[in-house]
Picture 1 (cartoon, rainbow, N blue to C red):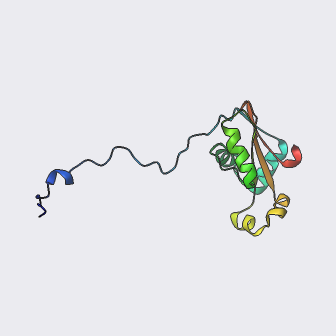
Picture 2 (picture 1 turned 45 degrees about the horizontal axis):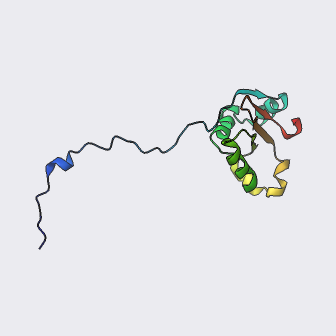
Picture 3 (picture 1 turned 180 degrees about the vertical axis):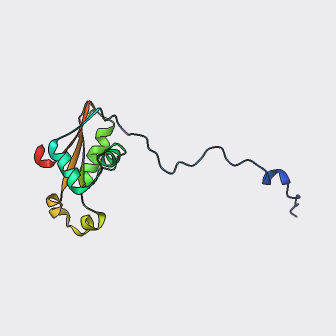
Length: 130
C-alpha cells in the first residue's frame, strides 16, 4: 500500500529558480568592424523610412533577410570562419514582400549588408553600388 506523507509547507516556500529562461538573446554572432554606408544606401533608407540600426541588428543576430536556403547555409558557415557574410533586405512591409514572387523580388527596394571576411568593415549598400 502507498504511504502518504503530509504535504510539507517548506516546498511551497521554495525560492523560484535563480536561472531565468532566455527568451531572446541580443548577443552579436560576429564582429561588425567599422560600419560604412554608400550614399545610395543612405538615400534608400531615407526614402523607405527603414532604420539602418534595425537592419544592422538583424544582420549581426543572423536574420539574413530575403535569401534562398543555399545562401542562408553559406552565411551560417561563414559566421564561424573567415568568410564574407551577406544579408539582403527588401525595404517593403511584410505583406508586400509576401505578395511578391521570389523571382520578382530583386525589383523591390533592396539593401545589402556585407561584413568582410576579416570582419574589419561592414557595408550597407544597394546591389547597384556593388
